[in-house]
Amino acid sequence: MLESLIIIDFGSQYTRLIARRIREANVYCEIIPYTVSWADVENLNPKGIILSGGPNSVYDDDAPMAPPWIYEKDIPILGICYGLQVLAYQLGGKVVPSNKKEYGDATIESYYQDNKILDGVEFPMHVWMSHGDQVLSIPPGFEPLAYTNNSPVAVMGSSNGIIGLQFHPEVVHTKQGSKIIKNFLYNICGFSGNWTSNNFVEDSIRRIQEQVGSGKVICALSGGVDSTVTAALIHRAIGDQLTCIFVNNGLLRKDEHNRILDNFGENMNLNLEYVDATDLFLNKLSGVIDPELKRKIIGEEFIRVFETKSRSMGHVEFLAQGTLYPDVIESQTPENKASAKIKTHHNVGGLPADMTFKLIEPLRYLFKDEVREAGIALGLPEDMVYRQPFPGPGLAIRIIGEITWDKLEILRSCDWIVIDEIKKANLYDELWQSFAVLTDTKSVGVMGDSRTYGYMVAIRAVTSEDAMTADWARIPYEVLATISNRIVNEVPEVNRVVYDITSKPPGTIEWE
Image (cartoon, rainbow, N blue to C red; front, side):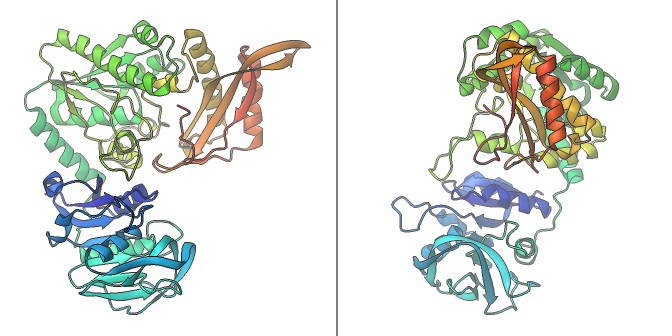
């Protein structure tokens, strides 16, 4: 039976990082809003609960609080930063504004080292703090376990497995943070650590078979990692009940449709249908500038194409998609005010309300690296599993402003050069993504003693583990120079190339 940990989100910038650390410890987890009921999570069989940090004070008007049921279920709880203050406040302690706020590195000392949460931790310990309030008095039944010069209660715990940490164990700046997290998972919650790619594959196959029965499934195949693993997983579960549909929406990279058809013909023995819907998509996108509207149009048109195609296949009840957890997190419109929607992903918020299919999304709660591990467990070739991500809306969100066929051809040529040079420099596998963006800016240039007025193209390359955060890649100058020279010489409509050095946050990886 699935065992899981649930993370109650109070809006911390580190909430997703908490989830990453839990998954790295081979424990399944999900992030949920603080407004959910026990009925919403009971099916997850939670063996542990984490309360995230957050920007609020427990005394703020409408400050988010933990739902009362978490204290009624005899499930171990770990409160982090604001989560600690929520525990103290709700259970009868006292939280007050700190005379000296703590942001950044701090040194923690232990009152008692003979406890499960700090087992094996060496003191003094460097931790990462980010708080303005502090616990002045602890609730009944708790004892203080550690302190800093400014926080008399940096760690508190009770005999029934409720722990509070004033610092953030999930960030790399807390040097022994992973040990503390594992102490909570294994010493206190009693997890078995069985969340592995092989177990995920086996469990997913069983769930897909139960959901589909003898029904038919169509899978939206793009050739990217997510849809490829989705198709392989479902094909393993139900065989010829699956038909994959590859839709050429005109927003693909240079020669992409031919490469995809060739790759899947060689490596995967499945039913594959090809639909060229270029004119349909470009007509629908004509004159559209707003990126959110682009995503919604593309998401809806994909569904309409699938609906049309499925009519010739008899009754098709299910549509499979390669939706990932970051897509879900960034697209959700929260019931609470603790977090905000970043952007709508075409296969989440872009789906039409009147869609007739039932969705199958076996990767919905996976991060990208976990998807790759599942692909390897399924026996897929590494060159298919380790491709750089390509967005579902394709080049539509790499063209700033209106999309035209001419702009698409310009961007395809630029993007081809970027990837070609990145691979020549043996950088492709080191980068999370590398691509070109066609801006809506034109500038004056000079070529061959003549004035030019051409587009400015931006090069974007980032490093990341899961796309939730990313850093701009320090590509060698000579590689950037070669890319720039090739673009302005081989793509006549472009006369200026710039390099994006923005991390995520504050920017996103894609420009739209």
